[in-house]
Amino acid sequence: MPDSVLTAEHVVKHYPLKGAGFSRRKGLVLAVEDVSFCVLAGEVFGLVGESGCGKSTLGRVLLRLEEPTAGRVFFNGQDLSGFERPRLRQFRREAQIIYQDPYSSLNPRRRIGDLVGEPLDIHGIGTPPERQERVAWLLKVVGLLPEHARRYPHEFSGGQRQRIVIARALALNPRLLLADEPVSALDVSIQAQVINLLKELQAEFKLTYIFISHDLSLVEYIADRVAVMYLGRLVELAEKPDLYRDPLHPYTQALLSAAPVPDPHAKKNRILLGGDVPSPVNPPAGCSFHPRCRESGERCSVEAPVFRELTPGRWVACHNR
Amino acid sequence: MHSWETFSDLLRNRSAVAGMVLIALVLLVAVAGPGLAPYDPLKPAPLERLQGSSERHWFGTDSLGRDIFSRVIYGTRISILIGLISVSISLVPGTFLGLMAGYFGGRIDSLIMRLMDMLLAFPAILLAIFITAILEPNLTNTMIAVGIVYIPHYARIVRSSVLSLKEQLFVQAIAHLGGSHARILARHILPNAMPPIIVYATLGMGTAVLQAAALGFLGLGAQPPQPEWGAMLSEGRQYIQIAPHVAAFPGAAILVLVLGFNLFGDGLRDALDPSLRMV
Image 1: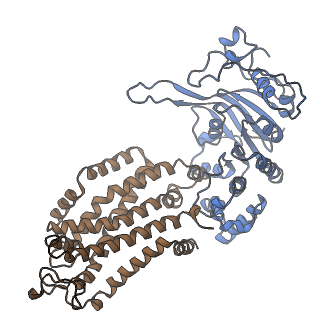
Image 2 (image 1 turned 180 degrees about the vertical axis):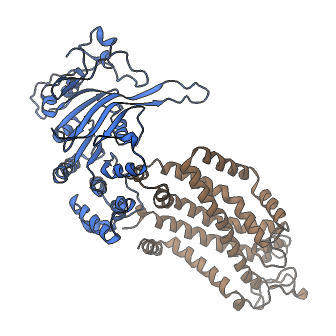
């Protein structure tokens, strides 16, 4: 089994709700609740869930862009919270992020060459001519032209901008790439190009991805293992083929049944969920999915299910499995 | 390089070119001043008081018979200096304070902005009078006073830009890469916060000239017989019924200067924004 690049152990992230005006400070937003998993070297780890389920927050905690309220994150076996400045800087080189919105993640007043070369500049790598050379190479790698280095971000389309962001993320030869909804701001026709680019780069540079998305078919296409998140918790984690063929958790089953199938004659057997996603400020007692679950029993409303390994590699948090 | 492209964009912008022409004209007059003026701007000629435009006196004469054309020419230097110096005095510390307050927030923000509020709480002219009175009334202290009065304006504008900029993804992305505060402020926040400041500063050139004139009128600014445009305008006010040209020509000179800087500032704002660049 390959080494684990990133391991999360009982990660919790709460945000205090600040009362406005005279109202008292009340409650906590339970954004991430007791999440544990590991990301293996060289794999694409897919993280799916509805908007607001805490997947982006989890991503930020994993890269220590936010401090977890509790729990620990290990990078190559080292505790992230123990990183002092120089080690943290090193970590910033090894783990990179691709953001959802390629329009706001590039400074409109800087040239592409400066933007892509900035990580090298920050970490003091190479002389200016060497950096220029590397920038030209990076632009070629992501399917742009070296001449583009002299242009400004507004001269590029969304898909091209995302390529620029990817080039910047690759500048420092990272090991781990966190892609937070990297294509959801793009047109569908462009999405495929960017996804394929990410796939090619992964093979070429032996990268490890954490791929966050709400799009099940996208994750099916790119991921090796998939984790499903609901209301701050992981409910299921499995190898991609297992999860898509035979989902165990009722929530995963409902999600997959809602995904469109490209066959007009396919029999649709949709599982419709009643109600809305409960608020993370005041999640239901017991299993947080129980008010919407069709298999909900007495135990579910009282006791939160443990996220456990059912068969090797298949994790689920459900009392009925 | 970058600055060259900005400049070539400016040349394609008609109002910016008009502004540059006006500013160039004023600067030329300021530099060539003594060579252009036909008379001594300070020498009174009581027999030729309040004459209208003529071949001898193009802009006429004032209440002491001094040649207004010569005085306007000499005043150009003073006004340009007042504009540049007082605007720099408010721009540089104002921008710095605004950057610090907006970027670091918290206590630094509260401290800086409450100080700025204290300055803002006084009417501008009253505060300027207060400062000149403490320092001793002369032209230099007028510039300092007018400069200090407008520091909070720049601080507020910069702070509000910084507050929105520091939440922008491209700023956060640099922080995520391990970029220092200095890098983020200097390369990513300041350049994006500059355009409104540049426009405000060009407008401020005109305001500063007028404020300095107001102080001069109250006896706290340029001391007579210095040919300062604002002071000349105030002087001419007394004769506006019988000899309107005494106020009109210095007024027109102020108009040219302020208009030039406004047009130029507008063009510069467009040129500094690459997304508005004409491709």
